[in-house]
Amino acid sequence: MPILDQVLAALFVLALLGGVLWFASRRGLITPRFPGSKRTAPDPIQVVHRVALTPQHCLHVVEAKGAALIVGTFPGGMVFAPEAASFDASLQAAIRRTGGGQQ
Image: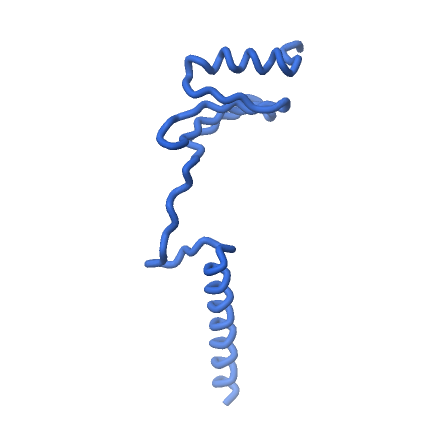
């Protein structure tokens, strides 16, 4: 009988875990990842690529609503550019606003 007790205890724990996962997915606390489960729509904003320039400076290519944006991040903030041609001007303006550029 001890084996039966262990099997029943294991089944109880697995059922309890399944119930917690079901409750959490219904409340939106976790994203369901079970085969055949409902999938939510993909995020409207996705980071397509990231390049670290220095430990504190990065360039990100972000896709939002089908358009690609270039985002530069630095300790003083971030710079958005809807296209590559306008990124340099936006970056220079941000550097002037933050008083950066002197090394």
